[in-house]
Length: 132
Ligand SMILES: [Zn+2]
Image 1 (cartoon, rainbow, N blue to C red):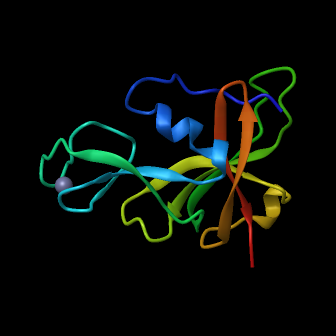
Image 2: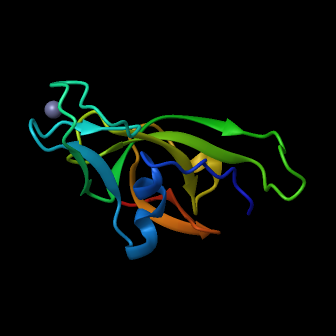
Image 3: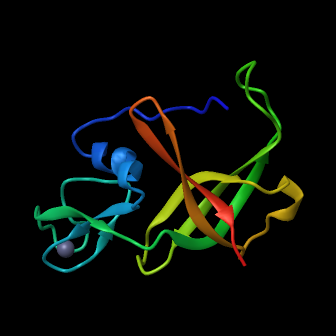
């Protein structure tokens, strides 16, 4: 279904194209190992400008969510879930995403999820589906 696509720029292009090889990546400070999301060119912890994309686990936990029932676009299928997913092994990284593959009623805070990339144009949207 059509989803809102992000604006790509020099800071975030790697993030939105990372799914091309099926790997989720976030920026990581090369000095202090802090993960940085959303992407920005300076580490918020140590102010280093030596930051680079690093592969992270493609799994995480539903941190919070909301059910969208509004059809923002005629082709949009509702309802669907907008969730914030905390990524395993990357403290502080919480992605705003959609949970796919389950009825909206079946999704809850604390659910384990894994990334499912959905390609649209030159973007690979990191969506998430429930796992056991
Ligand atoms: Zn740092």
